[in-house]
Image (tube, rainbow, N blue to C red):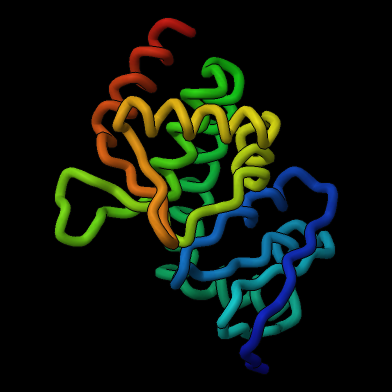
Length: 178
């Protein structure tokens, strides 16, 4: 059956379920509970949701080679992303973790090919939770980035003026941390 609407995400304590935390508009939602026999629910705002028993989902996946391959590619990409985030959390300091998260959340800025934009801008406490620090620390880093001309706040967006500078600093910090 299909339904539309705003649905709140909820997760079990299983670590594999954390793969569903970061959503991008238009992405397919795959319930890992269907594969792992765990209970879980998640959806996107303005989502179209197909609800089916786990056995039906498994049958469709295992009997459709193209879908199986797409699912394996999706899970591989998410595993790589989680590995990269774990490495960042282990090696990078707060500033560089914030750079990485902003770049991950950003998209190219229309009309400004060398800039990126994060819209809508996440609240500081949300960014702090994502990178493992306090809200006040994120606020201080934004002030520092604005003073350096790397990023600025605008109405409804965070504009990353120098993404290449952020990327270089992250790469340098990763080399130093290894």
